[in-house]
Length: 95
Image 1 (cartoon, one colour):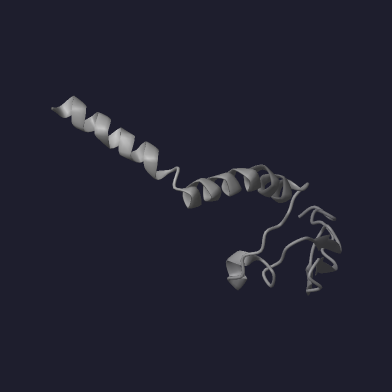
Image 2 (cartoon, one colour; image 1 turned 60 degrees about the vertical axis):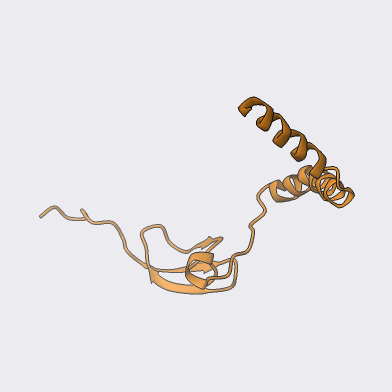
């Protein structure tokens, strides 16, 4: 067997953003991760939104006005009038 064929495999410490520390061995050495099994929603059952580059905020701002307009229209009774008109047209085409 060739000498020095296998890489060095020293102990390593993996640190999560939540504070969890895992002691293992790695050719990479010690490093940090953003999510581990203690804080990942799949393992914990707690679903929290991870906002990447403000995407969640932009989505909420974009659709906040749309939802407010729909709620106002539903409260004012405007949504019922077009539905009645559609039913009348269908009845006319069938007759």
